[in-house]
Length: 78
Image (cartoon, rainbow, N blue to C red; front, side):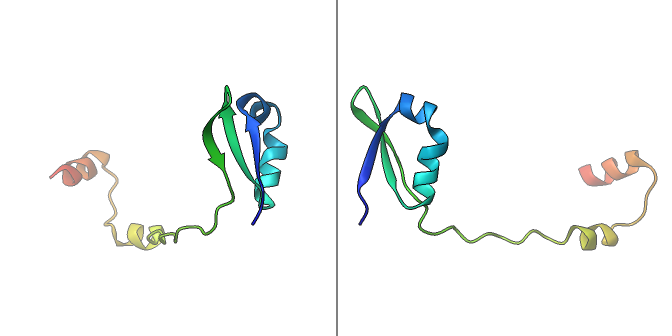
């Protein structure tokens, strides 16, 4: 279990890089405004799964060729 450090908003502003480096190394920080905790910075434990994007080239290859953009828009709107 790591110790939680404290920083003011001003310290966060002035030392963002070093504070984020500490977070990336496993440290947690409580950010305070006028002595009152307002936020907590801590390392992400696990990232949510990402969705695969559809194959754009496969989708485009299924479209019928058209040189008239007005026709394409008209078909899209119907």
